[in-house]
Length: 404
Image (cartoon, rainbow, N blue to C red; front, side):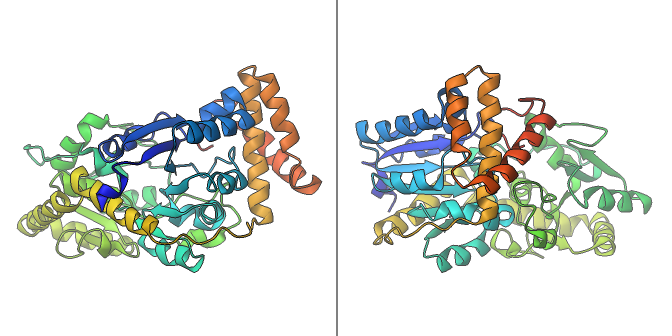
């Protein structure tokens, strides 16, 4: 059904020039008649929110846009749910959410009310969207879509390796536990003595490592979701096991629900649930290289079948086309919680100071008056939070559109 889009015009809205944007949309270009990109966060900070809304509406009308695809950060509330609901009266609207395990309750489900369909990386979120009568299409991982992970023929001289942010919960404790048990572990990434590993070196280091670790605990809740304490129990499927598989290396991952939808445990990767099981399996796979390498080869074959951009994008678009071809649910009343409204004002306060930093005084003044739209109590709570974040980020240390 990929031909469904061949005569369609796409407008893709994205929040930053890094974090995989706007490269994410390159594979779409051959499937659509036209693809136009707009960094909505930057546009809001430079032109103002109302002008950006008008710009989007004018683009949709002028270019006869058939589909608006928005890939927001959960820190971004510049464009409101109401705006997207109004936009949906002009064209089809699809949201591409990368972090449903983290932000479904606090952000994604509210914006999804204004969508014809949602793309999610989380199999378990599909049923949650279905309860709201919102069609959801699973997209395993956009990070491997660029085909940037590949096998490297090199000696395996690292016993255990982890590449990632060491500041996230549980990771340092696991690594220290292994080291205290005499296991040699190399770590690369923010919060590690080795620091960042250049992207062009990642495949090499994955292949140098006998065991590549992955962790599944979500980040500690912050202003974007701190009213959801149950997130402390959540484990998510991350993209790293697929990246390791694409490189033809072996992955030992912390358990997460629906892990089997990504790779087959026991055949293509293995998992652990606690420190003792991690240590036992590290010792087992270091002592059994044939078993380890056979699983790595099976995982690589799976990745070659399923996670190359050619297959990945066609599967995504086929599923999305089926959902958009079905009769659309009629837009209904929008429901927004008090916490959501407070976060919206928090986000727009932060944006207002970003506008002031750029000397966009008219845009900042316009945004200031928008902060009162949910009433004085929500204004006070949201403005205080946004002001505090601005102070912490030194009036723009975190760039426009980046979560902070």
